[in-house]
Length: 341
Image 1 (cartoon, rainbow, N blue to C red):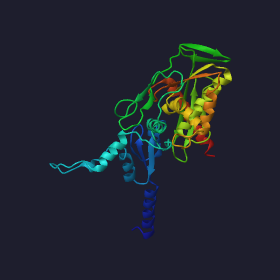
Image 2 (cartoon, rainbow, N blue to C red):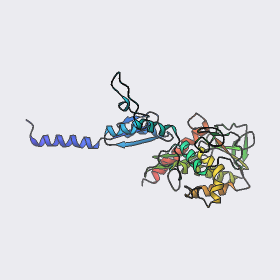
Image 3 (tube, helix red, strand yellow):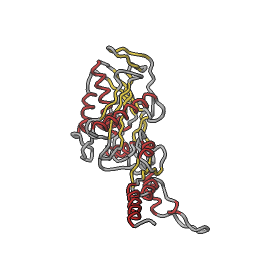
Image 4 (cartoon, one colour):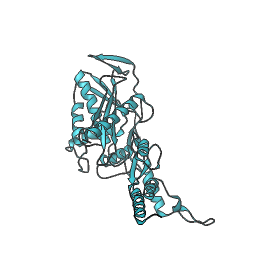
């Protein structure tokens, strides 16, 4: 017969097991759901842009986190068979949150799983002027209306500036010093840049950037970011690195291909206004990442280099973008190792 001591140990072990259990909820990733281990969760979110996930102590909390991104939960609209009942008020609220971009009167907080399209729209709402300013070849720029016709939507908000994805086709090679580069039809050296952040918005976030000139190119780079560990910082610092390489080698024309609409719009649309207002938004809020933006802007003022910005859509099999993304994730891993000592 088992004694009281054994029963106590058994109960204590059971309690300890329950306390140590964790549930990992993935609301935005390769496959959404609740996972029992971090390894399973990481497989769904690592390298997935704008992934949204969180650790919980109970499965119920984890499932609520996942279901919160859906338009409704089944029990909210279920009614007895044969009876009619209008959808609850909070159903419409949830749908509205999903279908309308998030606007703000302050700088959008890109560090908390805010999708870049929403960030881009929110900042454009603050700045209110989608007209490009001497941005090079941006003939593919178009504006997405929210409602109505004309220069603004039916609710008075300006259109959201977006760029059509376009792959820079290499038409030749250019030798610069000891290095060879692919160039496009206009003679611009082609480079792909990308930023990466693991745990974007969390205190333990790890960010890096990647710069890709071509297969096995000596100047390809995977670096940890300096300063704030966010995806946007990685995007900006990747462009800075590529431009410094070009200036150092005496390259006269550089085409930067990036999957960041936000970066392109910041440089080509909003930076001139920020500078006039001493690096403030129109609502007098400070510009985030101002140190990096100032450095990038200063480099772009050089008369020795012409920079052309090109947008490419992420995760669409575009080789240069995929390789820059891999390098950026390596940079994030480097950041993690450097800051875990």
